[in-house]
Length: 141
Image (cartoon, rainbow, N blue to C red; front, side):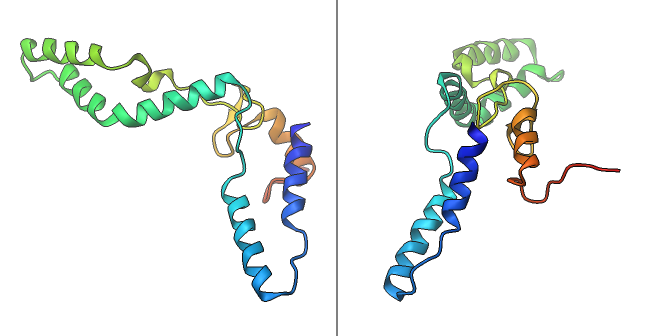
């Protein structure tokens, strides 16, 4: 079902544009906006939660990484490592990159997500079968 929505969106972009110059520039601008914003709504609450976690990781990531390097260093004294442990506990739990999970952008499926396209294997196969993914063909030998 989601594959048909993606296909309809793609074919709406291919509609002919009016020949008037003034209207054409505004229509091209609208098409450009459509290309930038493919997904405007999240599939479900899990995807919203994952996006919040990604923003938190991006915000606290560099500082958390530096403190972790201090904690794991073998050169730094134990007292400083204990201070770093206290500082790392003050970060939000969702700032840890371990809590991120790749999800399919079409169905929010958490398993078997292809990293390059950010879609699950099931959606990848259905989109590839109907030539909705450019440069992807079924293998045949």
